[in-house]
Image (spheres, rainbow, N blue to C red):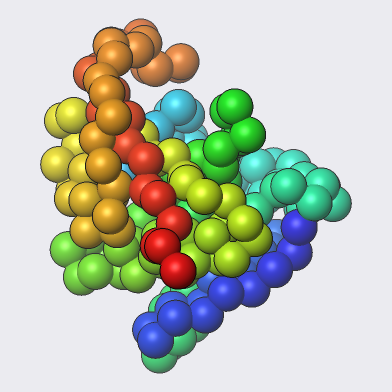
Length: 175
């Protein structure tokens, strides 16, 4: 679904083909950013272009929410946030952010915007998972109201590594 969300400092909008260079340079090629993701760093910008082309087709599905995170002040693409699936009917959020923009509160801001949207759509809770080692991601989830509901060891596809995954739920605010 093509949708835009806005926060004080950010615009969350659909990805576009023209985002390939900034996405590749900003985070898709960075092994530190992709360390805990299900995909490996992109080897070249063509891989990023192919992914964006695939995502463009995915926007035709009403349940597909996938946003480029753009700084309003300079229109710089700094990351992405999306609903990666709906296990047991519960939306699950995933995200990544260019390392240059870590520790500025941008991901917490983007995550809150997507959570607010999902709660407004009637979802009573949203899942977010993070590897225990991924301190920054766990902090984002906690800042957004995530309650830890469990842990499990999982092998991350394409990585050949096992990580302890912390599972969180964020519940909609009570009226």
